[in-house]
Image 1: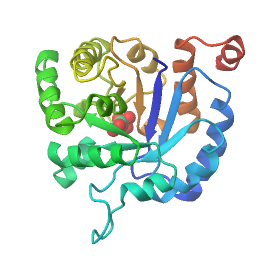
Image 2 (image 1 turned 90 degrees about the horizontal axis):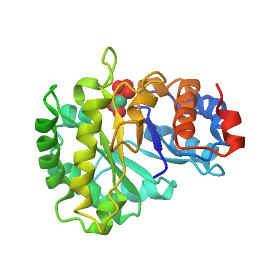
Image 3 (image 1 turned 90 degrees about the vertical axis):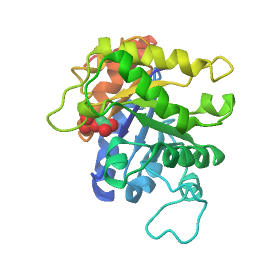
Image 4 (image 1 turned 135 degrees about the vertical axis):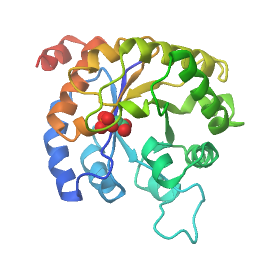
Length: 262
Ligand code: PGA
């Protein structure tokens, strides 16, 4: 599987700042073919992503969506609006949204169903709130995903992306989880998800304080198919460095390898 490297900017970067970010990023990664990339700006800058990424093969998307198709939902954004802007990925269930808005696994599941109906890929964030043993974490995440994926078909399950993000590893002052812990959890989840598909488990990406120092070791953990980068991707040079690390690990053609040397 090609590594999948994504970023959500959370509530950062205006549309003007986004323009500068893409101008800096795109030339650094446009020639790399070893991995798939997606960028999730705030709603207000999705159109900027489309302007810069439309011809590049990189994908863009959103950090949330409303589960309903439309109507009287002041301040919300529907899946059709995102699909119309060319979004391919939509994040759901992030720990910050579950905490701030009380989103339940049922709420997240309803969003997943809507995103799939609009032929986009949900990026489903799951993670334990407190440090716990890998065995306990696996149980917690499976219980969460049982509800979120509910009666989704095997074909639907193959189209989701799972972002494993231990809540305690997210944000300023936190540190990425160890590759051992991440590997144990992701390998178990991948095996469990495989049983819900026709044989191709969805990609599992790791998020939580990923930076250029931790990227390679987390990527080498069993069951990890990519990375989901938060605050360290606000610097486009650092995000480009992480993408280069992933592309190198995936094995590059010689032209890419030459570009990938830092
Ligand atoms: P962080 O955020 O990289 O800033 O820890 C990760 C996330 O919440 O996805």
